[in-house]
Image (cartoon, rainbow, N blue to C red; front, side, top):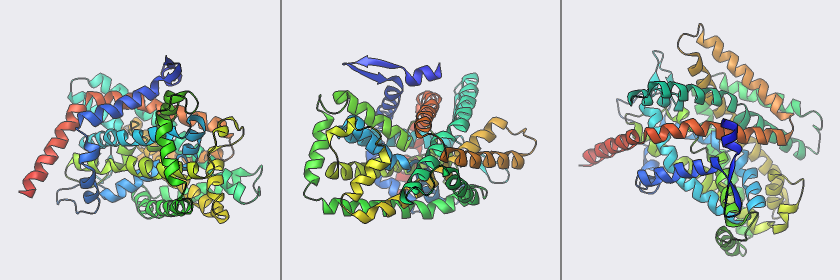
Length: 464
């Protein structure tokens, strides 16, 4: 039934529209309106929270900045470089516009998820935090008189995340990282990609075996550095192509509303853009709320405000930059018919067409993106796994170590798998977890609004 929902499409104006895409679009639009454009009115306050000091009654394992960078490390991955190229190839330049719009709408969904993650988190005696959709589905729906549904959705979400973390946050990332390293090395690892996977597994293991604080400390240093490196490279390309920039921006906007643009016309561009955005920023999946639940803050909604920055950074900034680079350099409508061209290759071609030396730093950025994503998703999978075990697990430490070792084994496996199989698996597993999560978000929407109102009232009182 779940797989049918994911892959089933309905005909609309001559284009097959996947139900899951409508599901995610609907969630973003609903929370943007229901929370009264929080993605706009809360934007400035979100930045101020990042560098402020939490109250004396704030509890948690990591700072709000560390929570944001940990969650961003899980979303800023290969999809920001290769996925955008795939979207433009399939849906034309107009897909970039819909991708940006999806990022904007996703800001509200992400705020709702992370507010609930904080509201229903559980803090153990040793200070460790358990939170995320599996917690707010089971506890939140239980509060609202639906304990049976809450338990079922919570466990379904956790089980899906355990499997899903091995796809989107592991095998896909290691596969693409290995392909990039092999290409830069001139095919040195042909037939031996597992060696790259083994090195990646050792590096990932050196971080994740230290737990959340180790991941958060790494993320708060790695994420800003790799993002700034990519932004710097991208801006250099745009500066070199500044004469083409106005035409590229015009092409993106005009193609977005052109019935003939891209494969499937307007709806085709829209569907591709929204689908790639969901894969990139994960709004609607609830994954980021697992990290944000551990942040030190006294008000759940304060973390919701911080979380809305993720889709902005990931999609509106980084993905949009990639789209502009491609459209100002190598984009041609014939790309849709070119076989054997994957996303990373097209983006690399765009950079190299301007600066021949850019292939190596771009490869470094891509590998760092993949590495950081694996760090965050190992934590998401672990927390979901431990939720399924429950407090009655005989040895939490042994089970935790066992999961981490299994995750590292899949890093090696993913590096040597066929790319098409990994992409299909990743897409499917991403969208599975959106089903129970958004059901819970709709049912708990009044709780989200209540928490935001309570926090805004406290802010107003403090200001007076």
